Amino acid sequence: MSAPTITPPTGGNHVASARRILEVEDLRKRYTESGPLVCDGLTFNVEEGEFVAIIGPSGCGKSTLLRMMAGLLPPTSGTVQLNGRKISGPPPEMALVFQDYTRSLYPWLTVEKNVRFPLAGNKKMDKQEKANRVRDALSSVGLSGFESYHPGQLSGGMQQRVAIARALAFQPQILLLDEPFASVDALTKEGLEDTLLDVRDRLRESGNTMLMVTHDIDEAIYLADRIVILSKPPCLVAEELRVELPQPRSQVATRSHPEFLRIRAYIHDVMGLTQQRQAVPGH
Ligand SMILES: Nc1ncnc2c1ncn2[C@@H]1O[C@H](COP(=O)(O)OP(=O)(O)OP(=O)(O)O)[C@@H](O)[C@H]1O
Image (cartoon, rainbow, N blue to C red; front, side, top):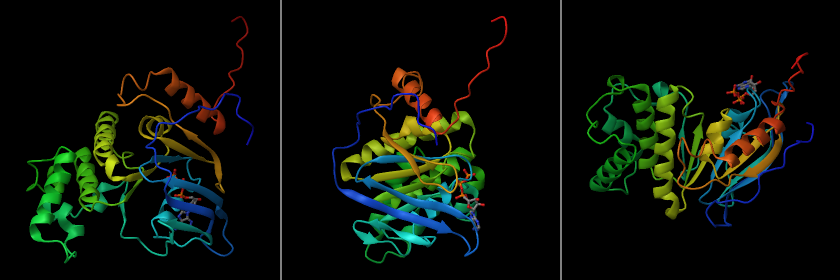
């Protein structure tokens, strides 16, 4: 990868915590013994309370990485540690939100029952606590009043809010999001991004950490405190950068902020997306 020609953004505004919650160390993945290398020695850390976005070209291995971090896919070599312990299966401190909400929600259950579902098996939690968590989670994604609806009676954006509420009711220490807004229209996506930022602001004090995989550069800059850029396959970490943009973020002001535009240009450069326009004769 050629060296970027734009100065990297500096500084950082993430929560002042140096505690590493997630450590990804020299992670490699081949799906089959003779198959191609998908991830080629990924190494990076996530600190408690951070919102980290992972971006990279299509097919570079983002979802593969996320599934390894969630303990759903064993790496060929290397380790993922959560709170200093090696992950070898889905850890109880983690919750996941996937792109395809139609497959992650149970269509025959009401919104309330979908959100309560992951808590059902928790025998240490009493009924009242479960009800409180469901109520708070639905309220935080703006779905109070929709408890008795079924997913099929809701719009796509609302269904993804239910999926986010379900993850929040679980009160995970770390929330992993795999292209969570890729299946909704542009306006709904903006609303969901702001919902996620609101939730994140409320949970920030309790050290809640968010890690999102996306192919959308603007979304990564808008949401994240830090961005990990993956190279083309087999992927490794091409660059890590902090996003220093004023809080609270706003869809109009943040996206037109000079620093936003500078970071975007820099990422395009790192990912080799910057096109050199040919000079048109006579212009
Ligand atoms: N179950 C699997 N078996 C074999 N190969 C797989 C499997 N899942 C993914 N791959 C391969 O791994 C590579 C990376 O796929 P992955 O879905 O992780 O990339 P991605 O960056 O998330 O892609 P996109 O941006 O298009 O969603 C691809 O070449 C894909 O074909």
